[in-house]
Amino acid sequence: MQRILPPSSISTFPQGLPLFSTASTRILEQTLAAALPPHTLMQRAGEAVARLAMALAPHAQTIWIACGPGNNGGDGYEAAACLKHKLPHTRILISDVRAREALPTDARASWDKARQAGAIWVDAQPDALTAQDLCIDALLGIGLKADSGHKSDERLRQLLTQVQNSPCTLLCVDIASGLDAQTGQYAPEFAPGFGPGRAPVPAPQALTRQRHTLALLTLQPGLFTGAGRDACGQIWWDDLGADISAYQQTNLPPLALLGAPQPAPARQHASHKGVFGDVAILGGEGLAERGLSMVGAAWLAALAAMHGGAGRVMLALLDAEQHANQASSAWPEIMLRKPSAQDWSSATVVCGCGGGLAIAPWLPTLLTQAPRLVLDADALNTVAASTDLMQQLAARAARGQATVLTPHPLEAARLLQTDTARIQADRLQAASELAQKFACTVVLKGSGSVIACNALDSKQRTPSLWINPTGNALLATGGTGDVLAGLIASLWAQGLSAQQAATQGAYRHGRVADQWPAERPFSASALAQHLRTR
Image (spheres, rainbow, N blue to C red):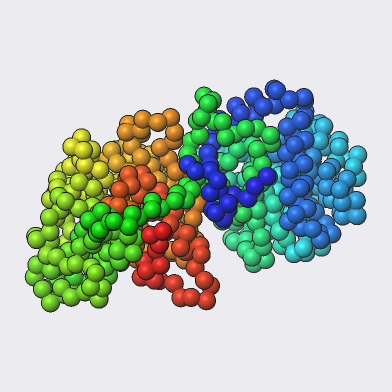
Protein backbone atom coordinates (compact mmCIF):
# COMPACT_ATOMS: atom_id res chain seq x y z
CA MET A 1 0.00 0.00 0.00
CA GLN A 2 1.27 3.48 -0.77
CA ARG A 3 0.16 7.05 -0.35
CA ILE A 4 -0.37 8.73 -3.70
CA LEU A 5 -0.86 12.32 -2.59
CA PRO A 6 1.03 14.56 -1.87
CA PRO A 7 2.66 14.14 -5.27
CA SER A 8 6.21 13.74 -3.98
CA SER A 9 5.26 10.20 -3.06
CA ILE A 10 4.88 9.21 -6.74
CA SER A 11 8.30 10.37 -7.88
CA THR A 12 9.47 6.75 -8.17
CA PHE A 13 7.23 6.40 -11.25
CA PRO A 14 9.21 8.42 -13.82
CA GLN A 15 6.46 8.65 -16.43
CA GLY A 16 3.59 8.95 -13.98
CA LEU A 17 1.25 6.44 -12.38
CA PRO A 18 -1.15 4.67 -14.77
CA LEU A 19 -4.83 5.57 -14.45
CA PHE A 20 -7.17 2.93 -15.85
CA SER A 21 -10.70 3.15 -17.18
CA THR A 22 -13.44 1.29 -15.36
CA ALA A 23 -13.78 -1.23 -18.19
CA SER A 24 -10.05 -2.04 -18.15
CA THR A 25 -10.08 -2.32 -14.37
CA ARG A 26 -12.92 -4.85 -14.56
CA ILE A 27 -10.93 -6.96 -17.03
CA LEU A 28 -7.83 -6.82 -14.84
CA GLU A 29 -9.96 -7.75 -11.83
CA GLN A 30 -11.47 -10.76 -13.60
CA THR A 31 -8.06 -11.90 -14.85
CA LEU A 32 -6.51 -11.69 -11.39
CA ALA A 33 -9.48 -13.36 -9.69
CA ALA A 34 -9.38 -16.26 -12.16
CA ALA A 35 -5.73 -16.92 -11.26
CA LEU A 36 -6.43 -17.03 -7.50
CA PRO A 37 -8.46 -19.31 -5.22
CA PRO A 38 -12.10 -18.25 -4.85
CA HIS A 39 -12.75 -15.24 -2.61
CA THR A 40 -9.02 -14.38 -2.37
CA LEU A 41 -9.30 -11.00 -4.06
CA MET A 42 -12.08 -9.77 -1.76
CA GLN A 43 -10.17 -11.07 1.24
CA ARG A 44 -7.10 -9.09 0.17
CA ALA A 45 -9.23 -6.00 -0.34
CA GLY A 46 -10.84 -6.28 3.08
CA GLU A 47 -7.49 -6.78 4.77
CA ALA A 48 -6.09 -3.69 3.01
CA VAL A 49 -9.07 -1.59 4.13
CA ALA A 50 -8.67 -2.84 7.70
CA ARG A 51 -4.94 -2.04 7.78
CA LEU A 52 -5.52 1.51 6.63
CA ALA A 53 -8.49 1.95 8.97
CA MET A 54 -6.36 1.04 11.99
CA ALA A 55 -3.63 3.44 10.89
CA LEU A 56 -6.05 6.32 10.35
CA ALA A 57 -8.05 5.90 13.57
CA PRO A 58 -5.86 4.04 16.07
CA HIS A 59 -7.92 5.26 19.04
CA ALA A 60 -11.38 4.79 17.57
CA GLN A 61 -13.93 3.37 19.95
CA THR A 62 -16.42 2.88 17.12
CA ILE A 63 -15.92 2.04 13.45
CA TRP A 64 -19.12 2.33 11.42
CA ILE A 65 -19.15 0.65 7.99
CA ALA A 66 -21.85 1.42 5.42
CA CYS A 67 -22.05 -1.51 2.98
CA GLY A 68 -23.66 -1.34 -0.44
CA PRO A 69 -25.41 -3.99 -2.52
CA GLY A 70 -22.41 -5.19 -4.56
CA ASN A 71 -18.81 -6.27 -4.16
CA ASN A 72 -17.83 -2.87 -2.81
CA GLY A 73 -20.09 -3.71 0.11
CA GLY A 74 -18.43 -7.13 0.21
CA ASP A 75 -15.08 -5.41 0.76
CA GLY A 76 -16.71 -3.58 3.66
CA TYR A 77 -17.98 -6.81 5.26
CA GLU A 78 -14.54 -8.39 4.84
CA ALA A 79 -12.92 -5.35 6.46
CA ALA A 80 -15.39 -5.59 9.36
CA ALA A 81 -14.38 -9.20 10.01
CA CYS A 82 -10.67 -8.31 9.95
CA LEU A 83 -11.15 -5.33 12.23
CA LYS A 84 -13.15 -7.28 14.77
CA HIS A 85 -10.42 -9.93 14.98
CA LYS A 86 -7.67 -7.32 15.37
CA LEU A 87 -9.61 -4.86 17.58
CA PRO A 88 -11.80 -7.04 19.81
CA HIS A 89 -12.66 -4.15 22.16
CA THR A 90 -13.67 -1.73 19.40
CA ARG A 91 -17.32 -1.53 18.36
CA ILE A 92 -17.53 -2.61 14.70
CA LEU A 93 -20.94 -1.56 13.41
CA ILE A 94 -22.45 -2.31 10.01
CA SER A 95 -25.38 -0.73 8.18
CA ASP A 96 -26.19 -2.30 4.85
CA VAL A 97 -28.46 -1.77 1.88
CA ARG A 98 -29.42 -5.35 1.02
CA ALA A 99 -30.30 -8.48 2.93
CA ARG A 100 -27.74 -11.26 2.82
CA GLU A 101 -29.71 -13.29 0.29
CA ALA A 102 -29.62 -10.46 -2.26
CA LEU A 103 -25.83 -10.08 -2.23
CA PRO A 104 -23.34 -11.45 -4.80
CA THR A 105 -21.66 -14.74 -3.88
CA ASP A 106 -18.37 -13.29 -2.62
CA ALA A 107 -20.14 -10.56 -0.66
CA ARG A 108 -22.35 -13.18 1.04
CA ALA A 109 -19.26 -15.07 2.16
CA SER A 110 -17.80 -11.90 3.64
CA TRP A 111 -21.15 -11.07 5.29
CA ASP A 112 -20.99 -14.43 7.03
CA LYS A 113 -17.42 -13.80 8.20
CA ALA A 114 -18.36 -10.41 9.65
CA ARG A 115 -21.32 -11.96 11.52
CA GLN A 116 -19.17 -14.78 12.87
CA ALA A 117 -16.47 -12.33 13.97
CA GLY A 118 -18.96 -10.43 16.12
CA ALA A 119 -19.70 -7.28 14.10
CA ILE A 120 -23.01 -5.65 15.06
CA TRP A 121 -25.66 -4.60 12.54
CA VAL A 122 -27.35 -1.23 13.10
CA ASP A 123 -30.06 0.49 11.10
CA ALA A 124 -28.27 3.82 10.72
CA GLN A 125 -25.21 5.82 11.67
CA PRO A 126 -24.84 5.76 15.45
CA ASP A 127 -25.49 9.08 17.18
CA ALA A 128 -22.43 8.83 19.42
CA LEU A 129 -19.76 8.99 16.70
CA THR A 130 -16.95 11.42 17.57
CA ALA A 131 -14.03 12.91 15.68
CA GLN A 132 -11.73 10.08 16.81
CA ASP A 133 -14.03 7.39 15.39
CA LEU A 134 -14.07 6.19 11.79
CA CYS A 135 -16.69 5.89 9.06
CA ILE A 136 -15.99 3.50 6.16
CA ASP A 137 -17.86 4.15 2.92
CA ALA A 138 -18.31 0.82 1.10
CA LEU A 139 -21.63 1.71 -0.54
CA LEU A 140 -20.85 2.22 -4.23
CA GLY A 141 -17.72 1.30 -6.14
CA ILE A 142 -16.28 2.16 -9.53
CA GLY A 143 -19.15 0.94 -11.69
CA LEU A 144 -21.32 4.04 -11.27
CA LYS A 145 -21.72 6.26 -14.34
CA ALA A 146 -22.60 9.90 -13.75
CA ASP A 147 -24.46 10.26 -17.06
CA SER A 148 -26.79 7.27 -16.75
CA GLY A 149 -30.02 6.99 -14.83
CA HIS A 150 -30.12 5.00 -11.61
CA LYS A 151 -32.99 3.11 -10.09
CA SER A 152 -34.31 4.86 -7.02
CA ASP A 153 -33.09 3.24 -3.81
CA GLU A 154 -34.15 5.18 -0.76
CA ARG A 155 -32.18 3.00 1.64
CA LEU A 156 -28.96 3.60 -0.32
CA ARG A 157 -29.55 7.33 -0.43
CA GLN A 158 -30.31 7.43 3.28
CA LEU A 159 -27.03 5.76 4.18
CA LEU A 160 -25.07 7.82 1.66
CA THR A 161 -26.42 11.05 3.16
CA GLN A 162 -25.32 9.88 6.60
CA VAL A 163 -21.86 8.98 5.29
CA GLN A 164 -21.50 12.35 3.56
CA ASN A 165 -22.41 14.18 6.77
CA SER A 166 -20.61 11.97 9.28
CA PRO A 167 -18.59 13.92 11.89
CA CYS A 168 -15.64 11.51 12.00
CA THR A 169 -12.75 10.62 9.70
CA LEU A 170 -14.01 9.08 6.45
CA LEU A 171 -12.38 6.20 4.59
CA CYS A 172 -13.84 5.45 1.15
CA VAL A 173 -13.34 2.07 -0.49
CA ASP A 174 -12.26 2.46 -4.15
CA ILE A 175 -13.81 5.93 -4.54
CA ALA A 176 -16.22 8.24 -2.72
CA SER A 177 -19.69 6.80 -3.27
CA GLY A 178 -21.68 8.64 -5.92
CA LEU A 179 -18.66 9.62 -8.03
CA ASP A 180 -18.05 8.39 -11.55
CA ALA A 181 -14.57 6.84 -11.31
CA GLN A 182 -13.71 7.78 -14.87
CA THR A 183 -14.81 11.45 -14.88
CA GLY A 184 -14.71 12.51 -11.22
CA GLN A 185 -18.28 13.84 -11.42
CA TYR A 186 -21.18 12.96 -9.16
CA ALA A 187 -24.21 11.14 -10.47
CA PRO A 188 -26.78 13.89 -9.76
CA GLU A 189 -28.98 11.77 -7.48
CA PHE A 190 -25.99 10.87 -5.30
CA ALA A 191 -24.37 14.29 -5.02
CA PRO A 192 -24.30 15.92 -1.58
CA GLY A 193 -27.47 17.93 -1.08
CA PHE A 194 -29.49 16.23 -3.86
CA GLY A 195 -33.16 15.48 -3.44
CA PRO A 196 -36.03 16.67 -1.23
CA GLY A 197 -35.33 16.79 2.48
CA ARG A 198 -31.57 16.59 2.12
CA ALA A 199 -29.25 19.26 3.45
CA PRO A 200 -28.17 21.75 0.76
CA VAL A 201 -24.54 21.36 1.86
CA PRO A 202 -22.75 18.87 4.10
CA ALA A 203 -22.88 19.54 7.81
CA PRO A 204 -20.10 21.87 9.09
CA GLN A 205 -18.25 19.05 10.84
CA ALA A 206 -18.23 17.05 7.60
CA LEU A 207 -16.44 19.89 5.80
CA THR A 208 -13.50 19.86 8.22
CA ARG A 209 -13.05 16.13 8.81
CA GLN A 210 -10.25 14.13 7.27
CA ARG A 211 -11.12 12.27 4.07
CA HIS A 212 -9.22 9.29 2.72
CA THR A 213 -9.80 6.92 -0.20
CA LEU A 214 -8.18 3.52 -0.70
CA ALA A 215 -8.06 2.65 -4.40
CA LEU A 216 -7.95 -1.11 -4.86
CA LEU A 217 -6.20 -2.88 -7.75
CA THR A 218 -5.94 0.22 -9.99
CA LEU A 219 -6.05 3.99 -9.78
CA GLN A 220 -8.78 5.72 -11.75
CA PRO A 221 -8.91 9.21 -13.31
CA GLY A 222 -11.96 10.33 -11.32
CA LEU A 223 -9.94 10.30 -8.09
CA PHE A 224 -7.84 13.21 -9.34
CA THR A 225 -10.03 15.53 -11.39
CA GLY A 226 -13.46 17.16 -11.30
CA ALA A 227 -15.02 16.71 -7.87
CA GLY A 228 -12.68 13.83 -7.08
CA ARG A 229 -10.03 15.69 -5.12
CA ASP A 230 -12.54 17.27 -2.72
CA ALA A 231 -14.67 14.14 -2.36
CA CYS A 232 -11.86 11.61 -1.97
CA GLY A 233 -9.25 13.57 -0.03
CA GLN A 234 -5.97 11.76 0.59
CA ILE A 235 -5.54 8.95 -1.95
CA TRP A 236 -3.99 5.59 -1.07
CA TRP A 237 -3.45 2.63 -3.40
CA ASP A 238 -3.12 -1.13 -2.91
CA ASP A 239 -2.73 -3.21 -6.07
CA LEU A 240 -3.83 -6.40 -4.23
CA GLY A 241 -0.76 -8.27 -5.43
CA ALA A 242 -1.22 -7.50 -9.12
CA ASP A 243 1.76 -6.19 -11.08
CA ILE A 244 0.07 -3.13 -12.51
CA SER A 245 3.47 -1.70 -13.44
CA ALA A 246 3.56 -4.23 -16.30
CA TYR A 247 0.57 -2.63 -18.02
CA GLN A 248 2.63 -1.76 -21.09
CA GLN A 249 3.04 -5.48 -21.79
CA THR A 250 -0.72 -6.03 -21.71
CA ASN A 251 -3.51 -5.23 -24.12
CA LEU A 252 -4.96 -2.82 -21.55
CA PRO A 253 -2.98 0.42 -21.68
CA PRO A 254 -4.07 3.04 -19.15
CA LEU A 255 -6.48 5.78 -20.07
CA ALA A 256 -4.19 8.48 -18.67
CA LEU A 257 -1.11 9.04 -16.54
CA LEU A 258 -0.87 10.94 -13.28
CA GLY A 259 1.70 13.67 -13.77
CA ALA A 260 5.05 13.15 -12.03
CA PRO A 261 7.98 15.48 -11.42
CA GLN A 262 10.86 15.28 -13.85
CA PRO A 263 14.41 16.34 -12.98
CA ALA A 264 15.46 19.64 -14.49
CA PRO A 265 18.30 19.23 -17.01
CA ALA A 266 21.64 20.31 -15.60
CA ARG A 267 22.81 23.66 -16.92
CA GLN A 268 26.26 23.49 -18.42
CA HIS A 269 28.83 25.89 -17.03
CA ALA A 270 29.81 27.00 -20.54
CA SER A 271 26.35 28.24 -21.51
CA HIS A 272 24.79 31.60 -22.34
CA LYS A 273 21.34 33.15 -22.55
CA GLY A 274 20.86 32.02 -26.13
CA VAL A 275 20.98 28.40 -25.01
CA PHE A 276 17.83 28.80 -22.94
CA GLY A 277 15.60 30.30 -25.58
CA ASP A 278 13.58 33.44 -26.20
CA VAL A 279 10.01 33.98 -25.01
CA ALA A 280 7.97 36.77 -26.58
CA ILE A 281 4.65 37.79 -25.03
CA LEU A 282 1.86 39.70 -26.75
CA GLY A 283 -1.00 40.90 -24.58
CA GLY A 284 -2.15 43.49 -22.10
CA GLU A 285 -4.93 45.67 -23.50
CA GLY A 286 -4.33 49.19 -22.19
CA LEU A 287 -6.64 51.87 -20.91
CA ALA A 288 -6.83 53.55 -24.31
CA GLU A 289 -8.88 50.75 -25.91
CA ARG A 290 -11.94 50.69 -23.64
CA GLY A 291 -10.80 52.21 -20.38
CA LEU A 292 -10.24 48.68 -18.99
CA SER A 293 -6.56 47.96 -18.53
CA MET A 294 -5.40 44.33 -18.38
CA VAL A 295 -1.71 45.07 -18.78
CA GLY A 296 -0.93 43.22 -15.54
CA ALA A 297 -1.80 39.86 -17.08
CA ALA A 298 0.90 40.21 -19.73
CA TRP A 299 3.42 41.30 -17.12
CA LEU A 300 2.63 38.22 -15.04
CA ALA A 301 3.26 35.93 -18.01
CA ALA A 302 6.56 37.69 -18.66
CA LEU A 303 7.57 37.46 -15.00
CA ALA A 304 6.82 33.72 -14.99
CA ALA A 305 8.80 33.18 -18.19
CA MET A 306 11.77 34.97 -16.67
CA HIS A 307 11.69 33.11 -13.36
CA GLY A 308 10.96 29.87 -15.21
CA GLY A 309 14.45 30.06 -16.70
CA ALA A 310 14.07 31.45 -20.22
CA GLY A 311 17.23 33.05 -21.61
CA ARG A 312 15.50 36.23 -22.76
CA VAL A 313 11.96 37.55 -22.28
CA MET A 314 10.40 40.17 -24.55
CA LEU A 315 7.06 41.81 -23.73
CA ALA A 316 4.95 43.56 -26.38
CA LEU A 317 2.04 45.42 -24.81
CA LEU A 318 -0.86 45.90 -27.16
CA ASP A 319 -1.06 49.69 -26.85
CA ALA A 320 2.71 50.24 -27.01
CA GLU A 321 2.34 51.43 -30.62
CA GLN A 322 0.31 54.46 -29.46
CA HIS A 323 1.68 55.02 -25.94
CA ALA A 324 5.43 54.73 -25.76
CA ASN A 325 5.37 56.14 -22.21
CA GLN A 326 4.21 52.70 -21.04
CA ALA A 327 7.51 51.25 -22.22
CA SER A 328 9.14 51.30 -18.80
CA SER A 329 9.80 48.08 -16.94
CA ALA A 330 9.71 47.37 -13.21
CA TRP A 331 11.92 44.37 -14.10
CA PRO A 332 14.79 45.56 -16.28
CA GLU A 333 15.49 41.97 -17.34
CA ILE A 334 12.20 42.00 -19.29
CA MET A 335 12.70 43.75 -22.62
CA LEU A 336 9.80 45.83 -23.92
CA ARG A 337 8.87 45.87 -27.59
CA LYS A 338 6.33 47.43 -29.86
CA PRO A 339 4.28 44.59 -31.37
CA SER A 340 5.26 45.69 -34.87
CA ALA A 341 8.96 45.59 -33.99
CA GLN A 342 9.03 42.09 -32.54
CA ASP A 343 10.14 39.19 -34.72
CA TRP A 344 7.40 36.64 -33.95
CA SER A 345 9.00 33.95 -36.12
CA SER A 346 12.06 33.40 -33.94
CA ALA A 347 10.69 32.92 -30.40
CA THR A 348 8.34 30.87 -28.30
CA VAL A 349 5.28 33.12 -28.20
CA VAL A 350 2.60 33.64 -25.56
CA CYS A 351 -0.50 35.33 -26.92
CA GLY A 352 -3.68 36.49 -25.23
CA CYS A 353 -2.91 37.23 -21.57
CA GLY A 354 -5.02 40.31 -20.83
CA GLY A 355 -5.50 40.79 -24.56
CA GLY A 356 -9.12 41.90 -24.47
CA LEU A 357 -10.47 43.12 -27.78
CA ALA A 358 -7.09 44.47 -28.87
CA ILE A 359 -5.61 41.03 -29.49
CA ALA A 360 -7.83 40.21 -32.49
CA PRO A 361 -5.91 42.11 -35.23
CA TRP A 362 -2.67 40.36 -34.27
CA LEU A 363 -3.87 36.77 -34.26
CA PRO A 364 -3.55 36.06 -38.01
CA THR A 365 0.10 37.21 -37.86
CA LEU A 366 0.96 35.06 -34.87
CA LEU A 367 -0.92 32.00 -36.12
CA THR A 368 1.09 32.27 -39.34
CA GLN A 369 4.53 33.18 -38.00
CA ALA A 370 5.07 31.79 -34.49
CA PRO A 371 6.93 28.44 -34.54
CA ARG A 372 5.82 27.64 -30.97
CA LEU A 373 2.67 29.34 -29.74
CA VAL A 374 0.92 29.32 -26.36
CA LEU A 375 -2.64 30.64 -26.68
CA ASP A 376 -4.41 31.76 -23.51
CA ALA A 377 -7.37 33.81 -22.32
CA ASP A 378 -8.68 36.37 -24.84
CA ALA A 379 -6.74 34.81 -27.70
CA LEU A 380 -8.78 31.64 -27.16
CA ASN A 381 -12.05 33.58 -26.98
CA THR A 382 -11.21 35.45 -30.18
CA VAL A 383 -10.33 32.23 -32.02
CA ALA A 384 -13.54 30.60 -30.79
CA ALA A 385 -15.61 33.42 -32.29
CA SER A 386 -14.05 33.11 -35.75
CA THR A 387 -14.34 30.14 -38.11
CA ASP A 388 -11.43 31.49 -40.14
CA LEU A 389 -9.14 31.75 -37.09
CA MET A 390 -10.09 28.24 -35.98
CA GLN A 391 -9.10 26.93 -39.40
CA GLN A 392 -5.80 28.83 -39.24
CA LEU A 393 -5.11 27.36 -35.82
CA ALA A 394 -5.83 23.80 -36.98
CA ALA A 395 -3.57 24.28 -40.03
CA ARG A 396 -0.47 25.12 -38.00
CA ALA A 397 0.51 21.49 -37.30
CA ALA A 398 0.72 20.65 -41.01
CA ARG A 399 3.32 23.41 -41.37
CA GLY A 400 5.39 22.02 -38.50
CA GLN A 401 4.27 24.75 -36.11
CA ALA A 402 3.31 23.60 -32.62
CA THR A 403 0.63 25.05 -30.36
CA VAL A 404 -0.35 24.77 -26.70
CA LEU A 405 -3.83 25.90 -25.62
CA THR A 406 -4.47 26.70 -21.95
CA PRO A 407 -8.25 27.12 -21.59
CA HIS A 408 -10.33 27.14 -18.46
CA PRO A 409 -13.67 25.27 -18.81
CA LEU A 410 -15.63 28.22 -20.21
CA GLU A 411 -12.98 28.96 -22.84
CA ALA A 412 -12.90 25.26 -23.72
CA ALA A 413 -16.67 25.29 -24.11
CA ARG A 414 -16.49 28.20 -26.53
CA LEU A 415 -13.82 26.45 -28.62
CA LEU A 416 -15.96 23.29 -28.80
CA GLN A 417 -19.18 25.27 -29.25
CA THR A 418 -20.86 23.75 -26.24
CA ASP A 419 -21.40 24.69 -22.58
CA THR A 420 -19.30 24.46 -19.44
CA ALA A 421 -21.45 21.68 -17.99
CA ARG A 422 -20.56 19.37 -20.87
CA ILE A 423 -16.86 20.18 -20.51
CA GLN A 424 -16.89 19.42 -16.80
CA ALA A 425 -18.99 16.28 -17.26
CA ASP A 426 -15.99 14.54 -18.87
CA ARG A 427 -12.87 16.64 -18.66
CA LEU A 428 -10.60 14.03 -20.23
CA GLN A 429 -12.88 13.67 -23.24
CA ALA A 430 -13.17 17.45 -23.65
CA ALA A 431 -9.40 17.94 -23.55
CA SER A 432 -8.95 15.12 -26.08
CA GLU A 433 -11.50 16.67 -28.43
CA LEU A 434 -9.71 20.00 -28.33
CA ALA A 435 -6.33 18.39 -28.99
CA GLN A 436 -7.74 16.47 -31.97
CA LYS A 437 -9.70 19.40 -33.37
CA PHE A 438 -6.76 21.78 -33.40
CA ALA A 439 -3.88 19.23 -33.71
CA CYS A 440 -2.18 20.62 -30.63
CA THR A 441 -1.44 20.19 -26.93
CA VAL A 442 -4.14 21.29 -24.47
CA VAL A 443 -4.04 22.14 -20.78
CA LEU A 444 -7.65 22.13 -19.56
CA LYS A 445 -7.33 23.99 -16.29
CA GLY A 446 -9.25 23.26 -13.10
CA SER A 447 -9.10 20.84 -10.20
CA GLY A 448 -6.92 18.10 -11.65
CA SER A 449 -5.88 19.96 -14.82
CA VAL A 450 -5.98 17.64 -17.83
CA ILE A 451 -3.19 17.73 -20.41
CA ALA A 452 -4.01 16.21 -23.80
CA CYS A 453 -1.82 15.78 -26.88
CA ASN A 454 -2.94 15.17 -30.41
CA ALA A 455 -2.98 11.35 -30.54
CA LEU A 456 -2.18 11.42 -34.26
CA ASP A 457 1.30 12.66 -33.35
CA SER A 458 1.92 9.93 -30.77
CA LYS A 459 4.36 7.22 -31.87
CA GLN A 460 4.62 5.49 -28.51
CA ARG A 461 2.21 3.04 -26.95
CA THR A 462 1.45 5.35 -24.05
CA PRO A 463 -1.54 7.54 -23.24
CA SER A 464 -1.87 11.00 -24.74
CA LEU A 465 -3.63 12.19 -21.55
CA TRP A 466 -2.20 13.30 -18.23
CA ILE A 467 -3.83 14.58 -15.04
CA ASN A 468 -1.85 17.04 -12.97
CA PRO A 469 -1.82 16.07 -9.27
CA THR A 470 -0.52 19.37 -7.86
CA GLY A 471 -2.22 22.63 -6.92
CA ASN A 472 -4.89 23.81 -4.52
CA ALA A 473 -7.43 26.58 -3.97
CA LEU A 474 -4.70 29.21 -3.55
CA LEU A 475 -4.59 29.23 -7.34
CA ALA A 476 -8.22 30.43 -7.50
CA THR A 477 -7.18 34.04 -7.84
CA GLY A 478 -6.65 36.39 -10.76
CA GLY A 479 -3.45 36.08 -12.74
CA THR A 480 -2.37 32.54 -11.89
CA GLY A 481 -3.41 31.34 -15.34
CA ASP A 482 -1.19 33.98 -16.94
CA VAL A 483 1.69 32.71 -14.80
CA LEU A 484 1.06 29.17 -16.06
CA ALA A 485 1.09 30.30 -19.70
CA GLY A 486 4.40 32.10 -19.20
CA LEU A 487 5.95 29.15 -17.40
CA ILE A 488 4.94 26.66 -20.12
CA ALA A 489 6.45 28.92 -22.77
CA SER A 490 9.64 29.26 -20.74
CA LEU A 491 10.10 25.48 -20.42
CA TRP A 492 9.26 25.01 -24.08
CA ALA A 493 11.83 27.63 -25.13
CA GLN A 494 14.47 25.81 -23.07
CA GLY A 495 14.14 22.67 -25.16
CA LEU A 496 11.31 20.59 -23.75
CA SER A 497 8.63 19.28 -26.11
CA ALA A 498 5.17 20.85 -26.08
CA GLN A 499 3.82 17.93 -24.05
CA GLN A 500 6.72 18.03 -21.59
CA ALA A 501 6.44 21.79 -21.15
CA ALA A 502 2.68 21.51 -20.55
CA THR A 503 2.84 18.63 -18.06
CA GLN A 504 5.90 19.90 -16.20
CA GLY A 505 4.68 23.49 -16.25
CA ALA A 506 1.35 22.50 -14.71
CA TYR A 507 3.13 20.30 -12.16
CA ARG A 508 5.62 22.99 -11.07
CA HIS A 509 2.95 25.73 -11.02
CA GLY A 510 0.75 23.68 -8.68
CA ARG A 511 3.65 22.44 -6.58
CA VAL A 512 4.62 25.99 -5.63
CA ALA A 513 1.07 26.54 -4.34
CA ASP A 514 1.16 23.23 -2.44
CA GLN A 515 4.36 24.25 -0.67
CA TRP A 516 3.30 27.84 0.03
CA PRO A 517 3.78 28.76 3.72
CA ALA A 518 0.47 29.41 5.46
CA GLU A 519 1.72 32.66 6.99
CA ARG A 520 2.85 34.16 3.65
CA PRO A 521 0.34 36.19 1.58
CA PHE A 522 -0.29 34.61 -1.82
CA SER A 523 -0.74 36.35 -5.15
CA ALA A 524 -0.07 35.60 -8.80
CA SER A 525 3.00 37.85 -8.86
CA ALA A 526 4.37 36.16 -5.74
CA LEU A 527 3.75 32.78 -7.39
CA ALA A 528 5.65 33.84 -10.51
CA GLN A 529 8.63 34.98 -8.47
CA HIS A 530 8.85 31.68 -6.57
CA LEU A 531 9.08 29.42 -9.60
CA ARG A 532 12.26 27.40 -9.63
CA THR A 533 14.51 26.59 -12.57
CA ARG A 534 16.19 23.70 -10.71
